[in-house]
Length: 351
Image 1: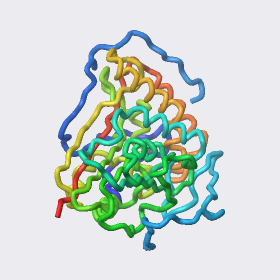
Image 2: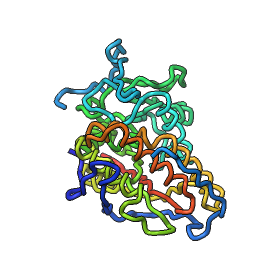
Image 3: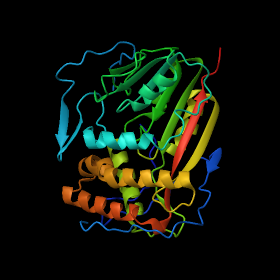
Image 4: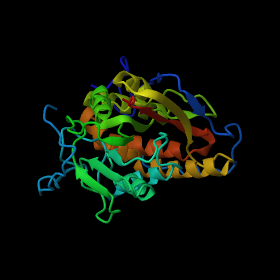
């Protein structure tokens, strides 16, 4: 199973969750905001008044049958109903919008130094926007995106295709891809060592894997967050909910180590600070912070609703309270809030 953090406190409800101190590997490089000590005195503090054993064929396109197109509906949201695991995030239009917004935070499609890739795999493609963008960047390449939900657009570049497949099952592809892209799969993979082993086997010798995952915990440059702060409570609850489901959300600090164990070489880890809100004076950081603030305001309840109800036993009302508290925190620009993104890439040894 995915590595969990032993000894984490219980998170039974928004009123009883405790504190967890994250631990991880030392980053190879760390990017801090250039103006962490300076920020705009323009605040927008509006509050919210409401408080497997089967084999997967990763080479052939599965026919989309009516049963595959079915989605589970829980608590008024829709989730995929295909594959070996229950994904934590909803697949309706609102959640798709959040995935698209998150793409706007990235200036590059990938960091791995791959040259002239001919075959590219996007694992957990979601809305398919990354696969479409990389297909347009490399018109000579064959780009495939796989996911357990058929929510991708039908009009795509001729060198881009999408397949319905479960990447948590055994893959059929061997020595095939020049680049495998895996972004924001936290909470979706029960066995990370197995997943990276499958990626390793599917890459050509000399091929690259490019991973990016957000850290689980939110921090403040302004003050030490209290144990009962919504950011602390939310992080602890997410940790316990993921561990109870067997699919941890605390995965980013362990990517580098797991790639090493899978046999990858030339591994580079870049840890980047992502601001939340408009407090930075740097124009790019301010824009990133505004987008991240919007993404979290609109999507924070989507991220946790299913897991908190199914894996922590919370009532829907408790999830709504937690979501409202988080939205209040996200809107507080005085906190100088931020969290970390881990970008890690590595190479399969050439023959």
